[in-house]
Image 1 (cartoon, rainbow, N blue to C red):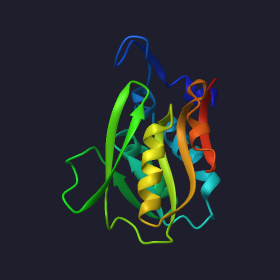
Image 2 (image 1 turned 30 degrees about the vertical axis):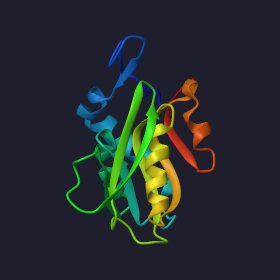
Image 3 (image 1 turned 120 degrees about the horizontal axis):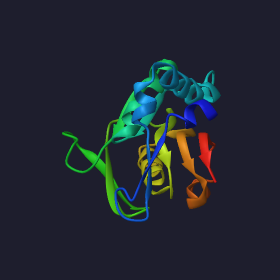
Length: 172
């Protein structure tokens, strides 16, 4: 993980004072680092019958689609309000620095499908918790959660303790 950690830079006071943003753009620009990150996200879930990967807007799209390709399955986006054109479900949640809402198409998955949840970052667990709620409302079976970065000091994994949470990089 040390190689990947070197490709993530800290941006202090973004998006507001007191927050240290983990900027993944250097990792995304590095071919070997990006490939390693995708493999480390996907590998624990190979051979587990994953049918869909669900990723939250926007960086969850980057990693989610790549993990879906690595696992030979489909991808479902969870978006911010007003971005999906068809009938949808919504969930509102608390963020590290506010409140937000996410939406999923009401026909995005079939009941019983095995789903892997993917995002770039797990902080307080609010975003991922809302995404899991939406998937479960549609009848999906969450096989696990894979995140590139976990900010363990914010205890987000505790909110998601009933799921198998896999973090590639963990900041305590």
